[in-house]
Amino acid sequence: MIDSALLRKSPEKVLDSLCSRNERYKASLETAIKMDSEHRALLQEVEALRAKRNALSQSVGKAKASGAVDEAQKLLEEVGRLKSAMEEKEKSLEVLISPLKETLLSLPNLPHESVPRGKNEEDNRPVRFGQKPVSFDFKPLDHQTIGENLGILDFAAAAKLSGSRFALWRGLGSRLMGALVSFTLDLHSKAGYEEIRPPYLVKPEILEGTGQLPKFKEDLYHLESPGQENSQTAGDMYLIPTAEVPLTNLVRDEIVPAENLPIKMTAYTPCFRQEAGSYGKDVRGLIRNHQFDKVELVWISKPEDSLEALESLTKDAEKVLATLEIPYRIIELCTGDLGFASRKTYDLEVWMPSEQKYREISSCSDCGDFQARRMNARFRRAPKNPPELVHTLNGSGVAIGRLFAAILENFQQKDGSVLLPKALVPYAGFERLMAKSMNQVVESKKG
Image (cartoon, rainbow, N blue to C red; front, top):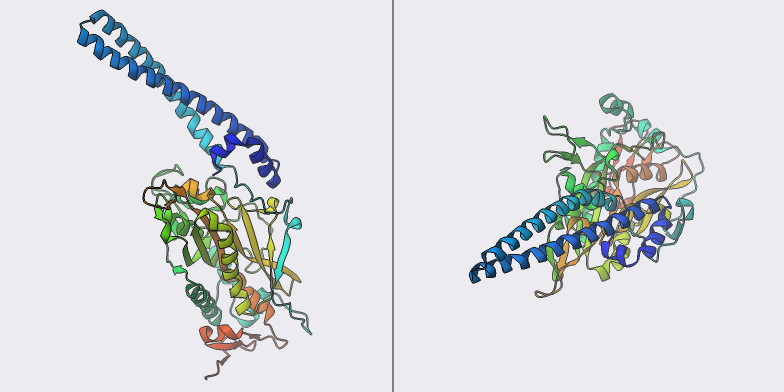
């Protein structure tokens, strides 16, 4: 959530920053400024009435003590009128609080000043490239065709069970997915991340803390408790759209000692998104499914360290692709393409030979204090120091289904087989997927 103090102090700066994302935020920001001004003015009136009432209450006691009964009675009547006036204004305050909070929650994070300005993905800029794409002496197939030819991907069975945009892995395909999860978690654990296995169902306020609610409610899978119809009642639960949600909220309502920062966490989870508004996009294969597997990276840092932490987190995600020798590039998102909660983001994209284009496989973001303010997540530099908001960062390390797809496409062979990256062979237990039969493999060489 945007800092209200900054909004009051520099409304023009906030407006310029938000409009660099999209001009459509101007109206909401102006509404928020107006409501905040009304709220503060009314709050000042309530506080003034309270102070006057308290002063008169003391005068009543003095008047009674001195025997001035009539004066005490008049003062009591005035205290009663002040109390009634104060209660009316407090009711007006309550009426203002909810829409003000709702409007503030609808506003995205302010881009960091270092982020290039632009309208959409066309204005994103490449930062660096990894291994160059391989040239094939045959027409490369897409990962769905390869997987179905090998008998390791079965989209028809998935559709039978759950409908479109779901995937089912068979045999060695399932084993390969498990190998990818183990490989990435090992890599991140060695880099100092604590591995977490969080719940897959969370309460509404947990999603509000990281910015998914109320903005992206239509993309979430919501489960109501029996007999409850209101989506914000206490029994409501949501399937997580990313492990960022439970991991980041582990510091919700906490004051972390400064010496414990940074906190680095990683988790493998299935993720669930309805992808509302993306009808017709990437319906084939593993690129955009309603359920997908992902290993997530989360940092909790001091404010002055978060930009440097973003560089480290991005390199940790990048190492997965570099170690597996998959062609990739890293781009910095412009202001118009930033995610809702992010103030600065690097996307990692893998090369997909069948499309002759790069595809996102990880998005690494510095959210500043945007999520921390929503979660009331703070740290204390010293015992007598006031608490300060932490900074939160997150990134995919990486999307496992898309990594699976990238391996099939980049390591496919002319005979229809797929060679595994060398670093993955010890985890998978085999080095090649053969096209002749889904059960035929070449076992990894010993020694």
